[in-house]
Image 1: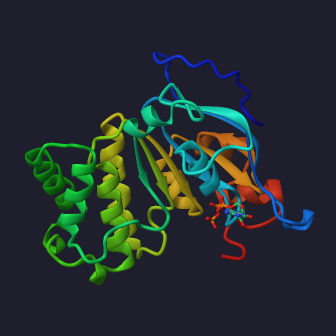
Image 2: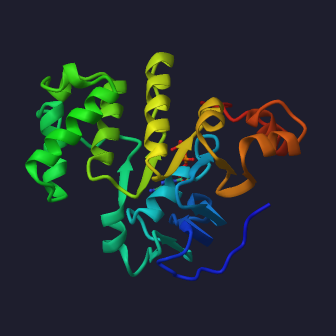
Length: 265
Ligand SMILES: Nc1ncnc2c1ncn2[C@@H]1O[C@H](COP(=O)(O)OP(=O)(O)OP(=O)(O)O)[C@@H](O)[C@H]1O
């Protein structure tokens, strides 16, 4: 049930992301070592949409984000982000996006606020703007009190929250979140969901990867269910649940694959 589209790079169109027949293969020395991490996927994300890539470990979610954000190059296929081509206009794309990677990339020996300031300066933001934005985001995520603590002492959940703030510091039009709540306790997870609800109201486009069913159902306008590099189903959570005549997205996945999403995690 893939959405097929020809990529037409149009900076005024209503799509933030257009992915067409995208492939990312990792080649090993031997055939059996090669992996089709992303295997001919096509989808579009509308401006302002909260779009989820939902699937088990190894489904190809992170690889998809890596290709769309220029961390790795595609084996085949095309994609545009913010109207710019991922192969030839990466510099423009970098100006539009914020990325919250699966492994937070922060400076452990700086405190939380210093980390935010560092990344704000990289974006050439004025000092006062960085301060104001940092304060607002730290308060929204409940990290304000910990802002002057060295990051080395942060818990895994706090590191993810700080990583989220860093990804948002420059007010990106398009936000990529790779498993933003992994390892968080339910309270911290709900706090982040609430926060992301606020971010969504700011009309940003958000692409989230997750293997948490509830996260996809609560946050996403539409989800693409991925497995073994392919998109198996795509649509609004409620619509998919109805279409497959089941109770939740976990059961949609089960109905298609005969497996649980969380199997093996
Ligand atoms: N650099 C790499 N070299 C070889 N294989 C890779 C590489 N990166 C990812 N893979 C493989 O590609 C497939 C997809 O991995 P990917 O990390 O994109 O999945 P995922 O859905 O994000 O899962 P997870 O949530 O566990 O990160 C997996 O089989 C993985 O082992």
